[in-house]
Length: 361
Length: 97
Image (cartoon, helix red, strand yellow):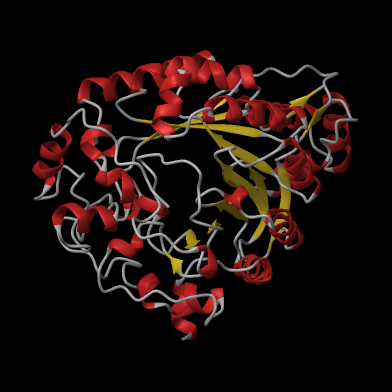
């Protein structure tokens, strides 16, 4: 397989889902509807091996995520293992379950960066979105502590209909907390978010205003805080280059050790995923059928096959193609060139103020 | 490349903050700058500049040193350094004391 090996680029990032357990119930959670159980989670020494194999493969950054990674008592050991392989470690946390003491231990273990999610500037709304009373106050305490002990902080705000009008105060809050970066991430509709789409979806007018706001805030705060945005793709003309292209830049390891090209990939029927308990990460990256299913361009149909943008957006998101167009190798229907594009507009119009279907563990 | 918004003075002492570090990766073909949720390829000049950003050396001293080591015109080195460090500071990837 030497020829094949040469065609496969080295991955840059590893999303390590340490657990699916989480005290919060956010209705836009990107975890699958069927969650891995605690007793099936990889132990710290397995993660250490995965990190070592990842670094050898070319991975530079590991994103420690979940669920809530702080739900794992062996988190310091896991962070230390990442650091020992030279990987840049990024803790993606809700802040709930972390204590100042735990943060200090993680910093000593070599943690490079912390991302804390904040649901809204308005406290009551934030707690309602998270489905957890008092979450907001605890998150702010942890975010301040991150900065106080000298770790770089990113504030992550997931944007949807309930908070889309408060982007400016959210960025002000991130500045006041001392964050060096804020992520304005519009909901991507997979997993629990798809289940809650009608309750979460903003209107086109709201989205356009939000995009203008972000542009304005970037100019206003240049050099004070970096503002990154994840675009709301239901209202886009062209699809996002999902995960930087299937099997090109990143991989995702589930709590139970299954390796996915993206966190939502399990929704696509017929894909064969391999597990780190049975294969090395290098074998999986190069040879697992799921990774090769949509690598390169051979799988593409029209309009992608002859499209001038095919090496920029790689046909968009495979999961979205399956979820909306019913065919994982079709063009992402978000693309205005897709024959299924009208479906996206139709789905975006199905907005309804109904109670959230909170994520349950 | 557009001009950075951050202007650095000659007596400023730049350094990479915690969470931003240079690393070497054979698999990725050389030096990289690792930062919160992003990775930049670092060319040879970038590496030479950033390795001197210790927080102790002033911008002027860094430029003088590079001009001497690479026997290059000071103005050209100065422009490279100010551009690189200014654009990193714009992205909050550089601390200046």
